[in-house]
Image 1 (cartoon, rainbow, N blue to C red):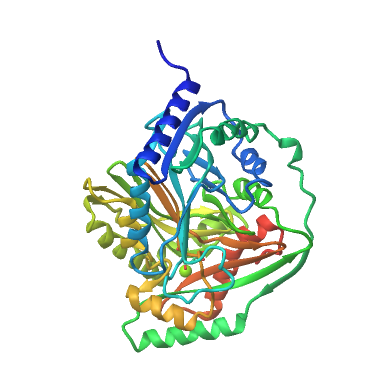
Image 2: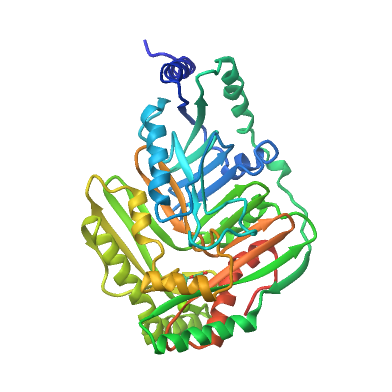
Length: 469
Ligand SMILES: C=C(O[C@@H]1C=C(C(=O)O)C=C[C@H]1O)C(=O)O
Ligand SMILES: [Mg+2]
């Protein structure tokens, strides 16, 4: 006779607790149950009070996987160093070695899952703006709703310590049901009035671009991505669920994410995948080269054609294609790279886009790919090391998680990271928005300034700020 789900779960938990006592160390227990479809934003919102500062949201452009995490049973944070990817991975693997799982198995993005992100530059001195996140931050949620290909799964994760008693966990098993109650009736949020919208040092930024252009003419630096910040202040605290909801409507073909730490929230709608790994298959995207959307169909097509044939933008794009191709080749047995870029048209902007696919050997992990790829010349520049150093020296920005890898990995080794662009850091009633652009020898500071202006629009629109033309 098949045992009931409840029994299986309690047996799994008892087993994990026994293992924790035997090993005298904490053991991760994870139970997955298939549930009726639930609205992921409602789940996210339901955890607002109890799990404030410990929530995340992730949705991929194809909407194959939507993950909402509440709570934090284990935080992983590596030292800010070149070794940070390996450090996080090592801790994650160690936890999994002893982990006990029960319930549904073999569904991507269910069960024990690590969510988080790395800053753009581990050598940038620690900043005040990003102090809630540090150089990198990952955590395993207590409760997680995964919508995978239209089916819903609820994961409960518990870290059993050798001293814990079973009773302690029974309430968790009951508590989680509360988060599943749809609370759509509370979702109406009054409009939050904009108090101030301010670009941070725009004139200096253009001067920095001009300086970089000059430097490129006299050095081996071929490309550098320079970013700037815009700050918006609202009357009341910014509600991240409201922002997510708008982003989902306005940017349906981007990754929608939010990542809370302490009182802050890193949120955005990025069109740029860094790496996706599913079994031995890997996917990445080269995205660089930009132009505005047209006001009419004709103008839009004309602008798209212009972008496809513009030598500066093609070069800007090609640097990314070459670097990603080389990086993937070191870890893959086979890769497929189209010869020509296509256009990616999103609400406020169009880009040159080349999707890349590969097959890797059995040993390569998603962290290996993140380490090899980050930062691509779409976020850093070329040569990579030099560009990162120069960004640190001249950009004058605290990038934090902006332009860094953000994503998840599950216990099956599958996962996905996007780069955290078209994003904002929410801090109470203020938000810092970031946008950058690829500067080449023939860049014009004014056009790069305009381009970054457009790149603020996805977040400005979602927050309720004034859009750039
Ligand atoms: C750096 C950003 O975007 C990147 C820069 C692009 C460009 O300069 O053409 C295009 C896409 C992104 O790879 C950003 O949005 O902040
Ligand atoms: Mg550009």
